[in-house]
Length: 183
Image 1 (cartoon, rainbow, N blue to C red):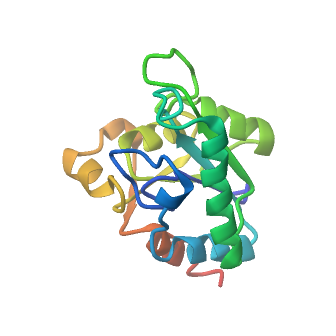
Image 2: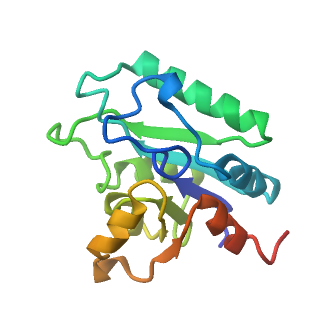
């Protein structure tokens, strides 16, 4: 892989997911080991970016200022453990808004390509089918984690058009495997 980049979904990968949405900074709860895993990727020279659907904005559950505050809480938590994100890409639209950035559409991935170049074979780590579909559309390597909605996603079955999907218990376990020959 020439592009030392990793793309992560947010809810269910870095932090606990909620069917009621993460609507305030205090509702952002990290998944154990996720920040340390991002720090390990950073130390290994990988740029780490987030691609996340945030339809709670369109649904009126929270506004862009609150979303920014949630992201500030996340980045402060990560920084406290020696980790950082190189970018946070989000779709604030609802499912019926007709945008091209709401996963499974590839608009967020296209924004990442515009900023970082080709993402062919770049791991995209997500807990839902729509995460994996958005990445595969642009040649990313799909990685399913079983945190968040991951177990449910796996139970429902993954369509063959995704190709080979790597499956790990968590972001930390993926990073253990991914960096095993480099650390």
